[in-house]
Image (cartoon, rainbow over all chains, first blue to last red; front, side, top):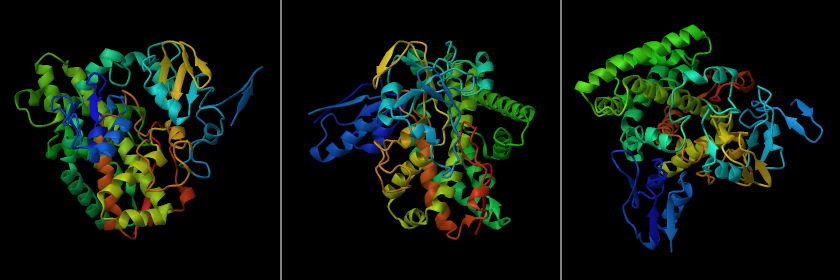
Length: 64
Length: 406
């Protein structure tokens, strides 16, 4: 799976980190999303989908 | 419910009464409507759209044609006081749209990341334990509101802001005045002014002696010319106001609701799994929905939604408790079920304005709910449930006192 994040839309809610901490982090200066792994392994698919679903800014998209 | 029949439709009054037979349920008239949005009459006679459907709320709260600009004519203010004081409020994250909102919000987000909040967990645990120690050593019955619910969040805001430990009591005293029912308007204002003066001085100190805290972050921005000092004070007060009563009322009402649902309480008291506690917090956030008077918006353009047309200039109120009790999103919503899928609740709202402090709130509540009932396993109400006085009119739902005994 390929994960794409939109930094412009991100509001630093942190919910993606809660859902999938191996895939998403937040940068120090303003908490905006940092994508740790653009192509996470299949076993993380559930968590990544959860992250996309809980993002309030709709800033995470998944391309299969 | 008072209804006024017009030629075409009945228009209900909003917000309706909460604290009916089940004090946690949203007002009945909000749950009884057929469509996910409908007009209702508010305090000033205007008829904004009330959005109660969970899915419709997501559409509205993420639509760029929907504004938080309270200076626009027709904005549906929660109260007359808010309407009358609009010109006294500067631009903040609450009332800024678009690029302004992004700029201001990003000045405040660094301290509130999930990882930074996780690092506060030991301090939250320590403060919680100390407050419980003090409660247990004091008079029995006690008022949970003054013993734990109010002090814990304000202590955490102190930690976050970087208020020195020696000044915690001063901070607490003045922060609490604003939320006390008996406080007069003058007392509340004096409390806020004392706090504001203190924060301004502390900000100045941190310009030359920075620490690792929010006030130091703001002080650095003031020094760099990105932020004016009075605005830095204001933003610090915003953090206090936004994060004090909301979390406090979750602790209080969460305790009341759990005492009424002993099987759920038992689950929380006995689990060793942090994921179970975390999910319990989400369900309690959903079930109680503390910010309950509706998120206020105004349409910038016409919006087609669920077969209705919201017209440019129409007021919009997003009723978070109704969205959180929408049976299409949460089956049997009146059931407190700490194991249900609840992460999609709207207790922190949705969209670009979703609560800045949500991760702090989550960790505070995870700590309190997994500590209080273990430390005080015989905790129970010291009064009958129907003696509790609920704050139906207040922006943050709660009770004035929660007399408990053990």
